[in-house]
Image 1 (cartoon, helix red, strand yellow):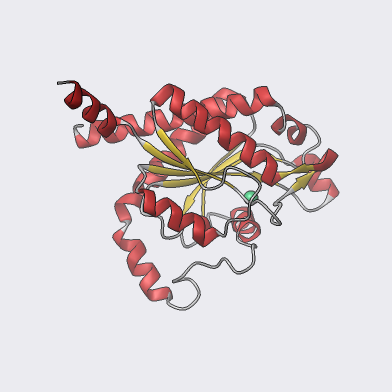
Image 2 (tube, rainbow, N blue to C red; image 1 turned 135 degrees about the vertical axis):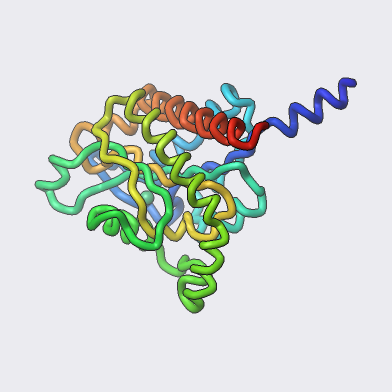
Length: 244
Ligand SMILES: [Zn+2]
């Protein structure tokens, strides 16, 4: 009896892979006062892991749990090996020019598509894909097989869209940050994933106010609560649909 209870509890526990962007020599975006995206992403990801474990009793795997370099392809392979229920990548945004850095702030949540939803989305994906030597298989040599494989993942694609909206709405409600919308773009770290997957740009590290806020423990905790709430709503949608 106890074993049955234990087994059903295990079966019900969602498995989530949380991916802190960048790491090691790949610092990502930078902001005022020495803010570095890789450190913010790791700190926020650890809080997301703790919150998912606490609130959803989820099993959570981080693609890195320290300041280490992990290629984008390795992150995808690591995630697929786990066969997770979903994948969340954590990043922070930035702007290149002084004028833009003063103006742009807010949260964007992405899911994968071959074409970006706009010029801005295209630039964000280009910046996040910049890491050298990490182009995933299928993109470099064999585009057709990549596209065919992607079409087979159509249901995963629709679920990624649902996950993106659930997480994004919770983030905006919890943080009151500027709502820059759910968007689509060809991120390498989302390509080839066999689970619903999103990439969250939690804010602009380059903004004079939002940058430092992203480094604040209480604000990071709010981001973690919101992402957890979004994941909870997404999983509830799946359960309702699949009659689980
Ligand atoms: Zn990034």
